Length: 443
Image (cartoon, rainbow, N blue to C red; front, side):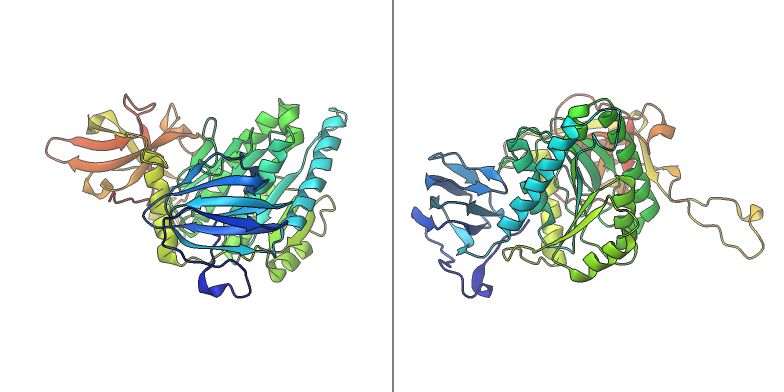
């Protein structure tokens, strides 16, 4: 989530847009934060010299240099005061003394109380032993991902292992864009590396906007929810720890419908609304018949910056690149060549539901959003990112989660060969691939 300053931050001390590479120190007073946008080309080194400070809820180790990659945006917050040292260039950095952190940590304290009550309650009553299921909602660029990370890191610091659910297909906090995913958070989230990827549960939607197929999006949220419920039913600790759910920034029309469906399907009992009165009022009104659901409006951070469509598209591209090459270019993806006959490619959605002859006179056949359609392998697949399904049979593809992703670099029609890049060497875990509209041109 973007924190940024620049000329549009009047009244804030310590504003700079330094291009100097000299090491410099910033002294932060208590309950202040240093908002940083790393430069476009070079990484930034940063360390905590004195006091205590945290990034997105995770404490910084004292006197250890951390290296933040180019383009990263983050904020260093201190409760009691700290001195920060920086080495490298930033697009912008400035200190802010007005933050919503006290209200955020108060929410954490209430959630922590609910977790303790759930843990202490009788396991015979499933509702009382259910910890908080928090869904964070709000418009685009309101700080939803940042708040989600803070709540997860603070909970992990207290010894809980909450489940992070990411429904934001536009950016993707757990894996690449175009997916919905969930993963347990066992440690405070690393401020550089981000969400750990040991055990993610991933479903491939294949597009970066839900308007392509709202029905498919709903179906995948339902699949994810059912899998999580099965996991929780056998794990009292995970059930008491609850979940934090990050959502998309599309909150009107179909986006609002999908938001309501997510609240219902994932049985959310705390709705945190960031920075929008209208949405908060609408949700309070529609959820008033659910007394166990609390709707709470929170202020968004002044450090959140609005990103236009081009910047968001670039961020998606970097996220996909990071999957194959690593955050610091420390991974070596492998190029492989296989025959057309080695792989089966499917698209979800399309094709008429019923033949014209079976429809009433004058009716047009509609596309079935859940129909599995085999895809002919041709040059149209070049530059597309495909998901590798765990499915054993084609009819399991929609209900199966994802093993990983490949990127198609070439299709040789004459030789019937596919060249693709995978994060690691060896055979793919499955022959069944899913294609959407997720493209990536490697630069």
